[in-house]
Length: 439
Ligand code: ATP
Ligand code: MG
Image 1 (tube, rainbow, N blue to C red):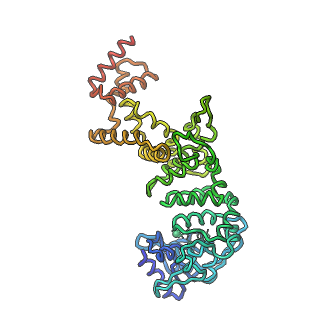
Image 2: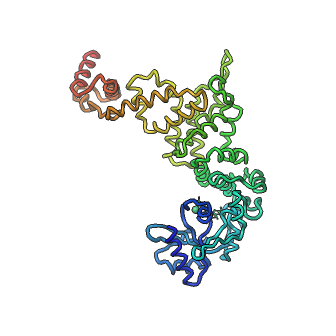
Image 3: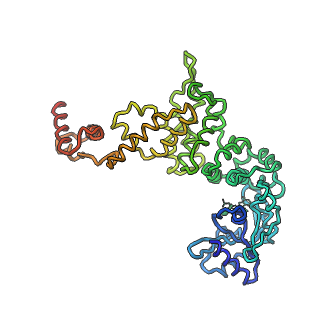
């Protein structure tokens, strides 16, 4: 990809324009990380870029960004620009095409403001980004306060880059971030969601969580999580402390790679504990129905953040079911198989694992499930095998259409899962006996 980007730079230079690699890719190259994409910044105007690269197209023509397709990859080629006023705290009212230096200065953080000339193998630094990269610090370009004020998304981007890069935030930038955190609410829910996802999917997610909390951004975007603070847990199960500490510890216990529903179900699994908290006559702490109410509350939060159903459904399901794991030792075969065959079981099992490890440390049910699963896998049959009989069979036997059909089919399936009925013949015999009994 780097070679193709270099060839684009060569072509722009040959046509008499300035052209360099810009932003994230320069930062990542200097950190010896593989850049996700190579963005090019140039003095060429958008129409000149389009003229040089037939088949390219403008995205946000207004910002002067052209997407060039080459050898199956997409490259953004953007004209050096300076942003006009940001009256909405999100988008500049206008842009002016200018010099490389001005373009560097409109960027968010010094480490994101570097250019690189691939032909001369030279870094161009107008913002002090090199020193900050070497010192590993995240610093706003220019006056942090006004940079956050003009685009409030940068508040979350600061936490995201501090998390992903593992850099501390420079003091002045951090003070401004804390001061303005509350203003993040003027950013669209979709953009907030995307930044939160990048933070929580990263392996440094606990640091991201802490920075969100300490900056005040968590309170602004998900006050429900802050309300877990001070919500006491039964001390016999939770020697560590309140629900907030327990949730944070679970984030710590997750592996590097997680799915969105898994990480969001960890964050939200106990979200209704503050409301369902009661102390019974013996002085024991109880949470009545926090899984059900939590599922509803988790769904509301995720929908407020405009998550698609693909994420909302499995997350809500995991929150609703997480208490069900305590019943595993008492489940009969059929119940257990249905429990394990639920579509999001894999993530739910991991949620259960970190939930246990972050509280009483008892992995008995987790181990039992792993053992059962290994046993079922060795049988190489699906957990829920194809049905032995169908509704048509029951109608043919004279069962009146209605809910009874479903009940009988479920009865057959239960015995099939228990290993009592194993073929169609025996299922039909069982059914006719059953119907004789019922008269
Ligand atoms: P990633 O590796 O996640 O893509 P990136 O640094 O490339 O990180 P992008 O969001 O792709 O980040 O943006 C590319 C560059 O554009 C940034 O490095 C930064 O210089 C600039 N930039 C992006 N968003 C903003 C913003 N909201 N304010 C100022 N500059 C920005
Ligand atoms: Mg990028």
